[in-house]
Image (cartoon, rainbow over all chains, first blue to last red; front, side, top):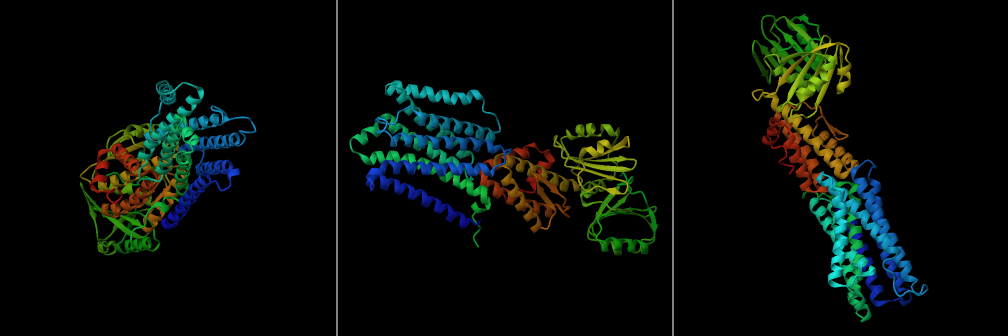
Length: 273
Length: 317
């Protein structure tokens, strides 16, 4: 595949991403079909998560099981797969709140189980990538320390700024752990900087930070305050950051997928004639 | 100097100047590859390296002196020299690196007599030497050549030839360690900065070892699909350069005997450029440079020096 054709294909992918964002804003802001607004917004999130999952799965299929990166992508695929299941479970709850007599999706609940397990898979993949790049093992105690730090930092934030409930803990835990995953992804992004392999990490960095912002807004009550006061713009921005996170990750994976399928030649700018 | 391939191709024929011309013509017409030894009684001995019918290099050996004769036509040069002893050794191209090195020495290499069963252990000891070495191993009816890059890098070439039968591939340690002749002699030709051929040897060994190290690291980071793609592109570059350097399975098989170090440099630069462009596009220039620096650090000093002196990586990074 030529450089120009690859640019065109990637441009199309960006167009699809923008189209999904626009559709989300349109449905969210103007509610053209009020009866199905929730269904549509949840569906758009599930579609985006599915695209992200397809990206990891297709990259994984390009590796041979004995390749060292195989194990990294296997964990990412499981991670994104679990997030996708989390989104489906969350949507299922959200669309049946009235039927089940619930005010909101219970936290912690079944979706959180998928989200947290997915994050754990991501951190395992990150650990393997770190070891591969640096050619030295990252001891299990350091890996366990990452999770322990997330727990302790969450608890400390809660004790300082909020009240300690299981719901609060879960929501702040997302903010802290996703921020840390974002920082780890930044390290990988710098290691691979200038190469196509940096792009999934750029996506993951944006995902981590964006999702952490979403979690902070959610956990701090800003989101609820805004919705109850009719401030749809702020809730839209917060909700959009969640979609943007998935789209950034999906585009990063798509770039690597193009590389695996068509080779680095498609990324090398031809010399000027 | 030890007779090269003397235990494998023993037959000397006394030929007149006319017969010699006919033999050389036949070599040319048949596009043969091999070593031709022409010895004049009481005078000098000449060695001609033929590759696919072309007389590529001619060495003149006299008492304690050796001279490489460039730009002479053997057909006219030997026309009036009278009767000579002629020995023809048809060997594959791969043997010429070792043969050329040995031809460049005026004296025998250091000798060690050893048991065949101890060959591998002896080579393991020599492998630890900081500088590169070429070892010629002679048995009563066969010979082997091993190129050790130095600094504990494993042997780059492991060649073996027995009576009337040359083996073109690297037979590895198995044939040598199972060879039925029990005793053999090691002739050790060490790196010597005064001998020009070592520059070419070091260039060859440095190119291959650094390249293999880079391919290995690229495989670790990117997986075999991208490595195979790169190897295919490198093989295309080789073909475009009309050189016999084959990339496969993360190994480099450099069969090309370059006429000069400068021509080797041009070819090696192109190959490195192809690799660095692709690898940098995939894993980024930083990891690429780290891998290069790491493999250069591990090379023996003379090998590293020639790669840097000839600026092999200049067009690449």
